[in-house]
Amino acid sequence: MDYEKLGQEATARIAGADSLDMLETLRVEFLGKQGSVSALLKTLGGMSPDERKETGPKIHGLRETVSDALASRKADLEAAAMEARLASETVDLSLPAPEQAAGTVHPVSQVMDELAEIFADLGFSVATGPEVEDDWHNFTALNMPESHPARAMHDTFYFGEDRVAPNGGRMLLRTHTSPVQVRTMLERGAPLRIIAPGRVYRSDSDATHTPMFHQVEGLVIDRDIHLGHLKWTLETFLKAFFEREDIVLRLRPSYFPFTEPSVEVDVGFAVETGPDGKARRVLGGSGDEPGHAWMELLGSGMVNARVIEFAGLDRAEWQGFAFGVGVDRLAMLKYGMDDLRAFFDGDVRWLRHYGFSAFDQPTLSGGVGARA
Ligand code: DAH
Image (cartoon, rainbow, N blue to C red; front, side, top):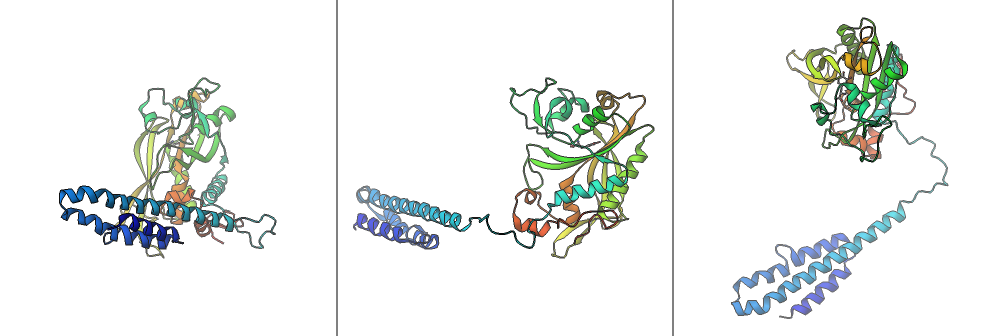
């Protein structure tokens, strides 16, 4: 058999394929399980050793010729497809703007506006801090000295050793919004009522973790503040946020270096079937009721006296409470998204579906979750 001729014929046909579909059909014809070249390879088993020595390299050579031709045609067709796409997807910036505004407000921005609105009504202002932080504000001043094991749990992104903070510490991407507590106490002193929403970073990535996500920190510093104030504030906030009176919280003892005592807050929920037929968690009711369970929602506690000291305040005079909660998580629970990664994909179909109209400003009187 003239394997060389077979190779030339196959190569010519492959070179003539004008679509990826057609190329795939040829691949199957030659190299698929039932393909002609595969069939030739199978004949090797029935040959005498001498025959195989002579024919084997030719058949293998044929297979290589065919697969090389397939790969190179595939690369050409893909490059052409990309060229065509680039040519057809140009944006003509000289065209007039569409009558209907096309953009939507991202759910994270919407939820942050909702939080600001709810907490403004409780006398809280919005504070911010840098995302590029230093070791001292992110850890040390929050009662996590150099060797503290909690540091290891933060999967921190550090900058190189060559970047040093003015206070001598290492630079990093803040792992939580808690350093804003320290910065705001240092800048504004006490008493204080703030929330601090913003981006935080951790080296972690799967369906429920992204390397960048959002938190909101809450901090109250005053005289005679106690756990009862914390519980009332969280309850009032969550009822307003989820627009349900039947939100029930459970406070569990926990540990955070920057609070003492520390409490983890659980919220009762039930599983219901949504309009799309998918099961989803709906907050409300006690987790101990039949058909309900508890879900961990946020961390909080009374601000550790050492943190108050680090932040330059007199620990004998001032105390307070703090809490921290994931904003993306709040958005998912309220608006029923199930994959955190979609928040940061920038897919316009997702944004159109879950985004908000720029005119749908959250207000306490109009409803903080109302969809236009
Ligand atoms: N900073 C914590 C974290 O990112 C969350 C947190 C817990 C914040 C307790 C607080 C707090 O203010 O009191 O895991």
